[in-house]
Image (tube, rainbow, N blue to C red; front, side, top):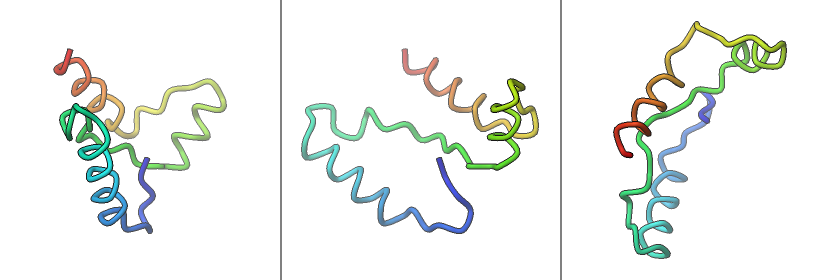
Length: 68
C-alpha cells in the first residue's frame, strides 16, 4: 500500500534486491500493481462496504489472474 506523501523508490529497490538475492524466483514474484492507501477505502471497508472510487484493487486482481 502506498501513501501519497511517502517516497517508496528506495524501499522498493531494496525490497527487489532482497527478493532477487534471497529467493530462487528472482523478481518474477513481485507484482507491479500499487494499492493507494486512501482513507475513504479504509473507512468504507470498515463499514462493510466496498469502495468503487478507485480501481487499484481491480488492477491488482487482474495482474494476479494473468499470472496464474
